[in-house]
Image (cartoon, rainbow, N blue to C red; front, side):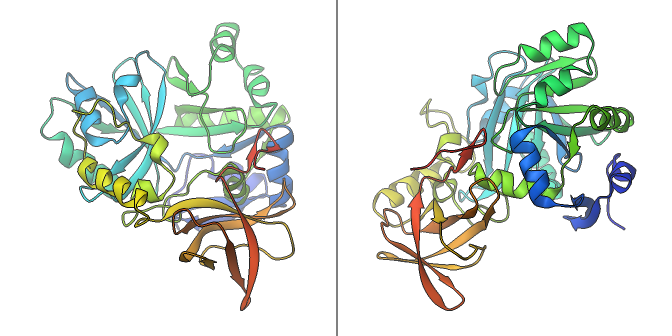
Length: 362
């Protein structure tokens, strides 16, 4: 038996097919993965993501600690509730994890991946020792992600007047503390939506209210195809400790200014950026196969500049054909994927396929 979230019994009651996910008993689907995917693209679905790791950072040097720990610039979090996506790097530039950090009334909240929990916490505790700051894991909190074009009205319909007004006013990558709840406009699907962090004992009652209101439960299978359509990386697949963020399409999450800010891995990824400009470091790009066949992780990609590999691939329920993320030689133009021993032409596109239910690549 693996770890279980406070919603385990709710998953069983909803018909969830339980699988092991990084040591957690989680629902892969509740019936049809494609129907769940389309539910999020067309209406609203709720994911249990309580397996993710929540850590709170406080103290006089909390900002200084995170400025050193993360590749992005937490000084940008100039008001409570603002959120930032960042990588946490090793000294050699490899990605230890990717995460979201929120500015809170008490300091900062970090939400990171469950599969990397032990190494993340050990690394952060090691680095925080030189700062006047404290790191506290919050296992007593659960997370519900409600996403889709009807998600925000669905959640707001279950809140009181003051809560509803605060949530309706949120912009993208903004959050608000509502007593012991924290509600943010962040997510992993390419749709509008909310992530709700709340006490474990309140998770199941709120889940039940969401389902009673017409929101459907969504499993990890659809979560993966939704994030792939949105061109979002999955840790352990599209990046890991052996991969530089420069080779993982994560440049947008690195704050190079101010130039005097020292963060872990800065020297290494500065060199990586120069290597990529010389064609010595690969890039993570999107691939599209509009004919028959399915692109899968691990398949070989052949380009005029050398070979690469698919890091994530699947059939896209929204686009009705196969898409993938692949790490290939930088500035490659022609791409073929080896499918069942045959080289099949694919199209290289920006690694972003669907936003708000619509195709976004040319």
